[in-house]
Image (cartoon, rainbow, N blue to C red; front, side, top):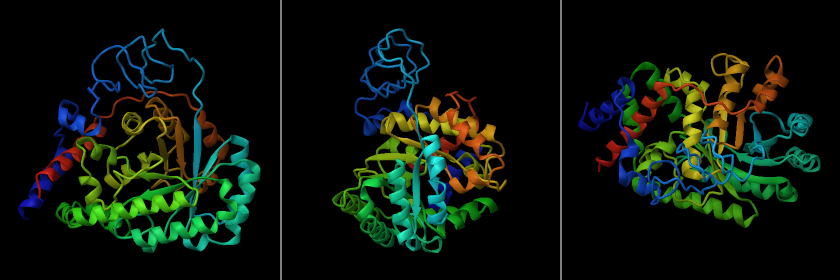
Length: 405
């Protein structure tokens, strides 16, 4: 094991054995993200009681918040708006033929749901235009979610970016006749196949040396900068066609943003920071990460990342929960667990909530019960120490990368 591997092994031990540190005590880390953040999570320059940010999200018991939707649990008496929060729910649609999706538009209409529609290269057919026309007529907002074939990497990352951009722009050109049906494009940035599969296999087998080497091999700051320029080109080209672009990614990227550099994004091959995204979406899938990392992750993971997402990226952030599936290896074990994640996302401040995914919902014994769970009121879940340890491990890796040329 070489020196770099040893350093990264220490980071992994920090995650597994419980080393932790408080990033909120590091002034330059906060100033890199927000020059006016004083770590009391109120978006102002001091620890005063005079917050005015619409995404206030504080716990300072102040009496001058500007609304009741501030997630501060302070029961303050000087709010000016006591109207209920208007939540927006988006169901991801993955791996369904376009004709099948068209036939289920009634579900979206009945429950006032938006759709994030997966479009792979073979979906660029007249059936796609038929679906978009029907969605437009029915008043169902559609977000286009372009992906590659699974064997070609699926998501956007440095290895797949050229093909990913080509496909995304092909989709954008093809759907122009139904452009008014499209709310936005969702650019899904994740480590592609087969690397992500190899990484999870290393984790499962305890082969930390191989996992570390895979991530270190990805680190290339010059390539990262060039890839970010490609991402910016994609955003500009979509805008020229009349579409804004949101980014959908790992929740752990929020831990990467703290110190003001994209080290974690670099080793994951997913250039995002610095691009002009219309909004951000984070996917704290408790079932998937719990299974892949072998950790008992619950609703507190959703709550913590939702809260941080609102603080760092604004109230327009989307938090997507999952996975809804009849497969016990990857899906929720009960509708109550799903409802707990929904409640946690709301308690963390999320007003836009996504669910992965429609085929899973339709495969449940009682799909209506799962859809009804979307209306679960906000509830702060019990703290889960493992979530703090997980996040500390990611942040520790991020800090160690600063020390490696």
